[in-house]
Length: 164
Image 1 (spheres, helix red, strand yellow):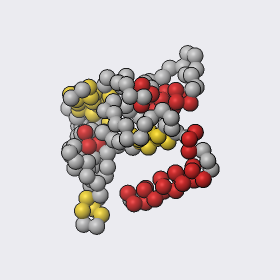
Image 2 (cartoon, helix red, strand yellow; image 1 turned 90 degrees about the vertical axis):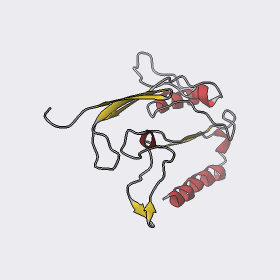
Image 3 (cartoon, helix red, strand yellow; image 1 turned 60 degrees about the vertical axis):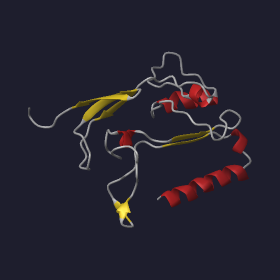
Image 4 (cartoon, helix red, strand yellow; image 1 turned 180 degrees about the vertical axis):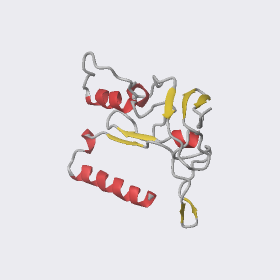
């Protein structure tokens, strides 16, 4: 899977170069959850989320901490790293700001732009909220729950199954 992903991202980047638009193209690579650690491929687990516990379909750090890669020519320097918190909802206002498009007047948004973090500043998001309303049958899975992560702390509220 990683080999296929690498090949196909390479094909996209090659096409962008061939079209001569690389200097005017923003590329965002973002995952929605941690890797699948529950299937076996070639005699080993499909993914390692080390050093974090859990993976896909869990509310543990291995299931909710994911990589995000932004390529923004002329703005984000290659090799730049940030520990800023972002969540998928933040892609909306981030992309709008990157494109120079304002949020419509009166439009409600639950998104915080990551542009300040991309430009080397601190992230604006102080906490991440996770709603996980289902209980998939995978190891390390908690029952349906909601969590808030702020700094080094995470509060998890479990919605127990059953009549009581």
